Image (cartoon, rainbow, N blue to C red; front, side, top):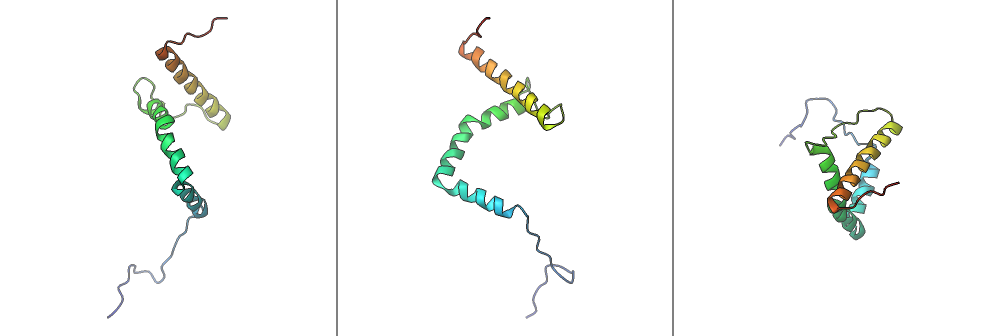
Length: 98
């Protein structure tokens, strides 16, 4: 019986991602009890906020408008301030007057 070749090339290449050790380390963290608990809590605390900011028609932050890490951080902080103000208004918390 002759072996079946999966390629017509003379040699096969196996490409390994250089980030594989980091990916494996993260997989191990997620499998641990503490990692599972943290990831489970993230689903309820953080991810809905990002989803709302990204997909809500009124907000719709699909891309950052500015370039550069510092400017993107500032733009994201403005988005977070807006989100927190919206939460405060929804809860009936009035901003302090100066």
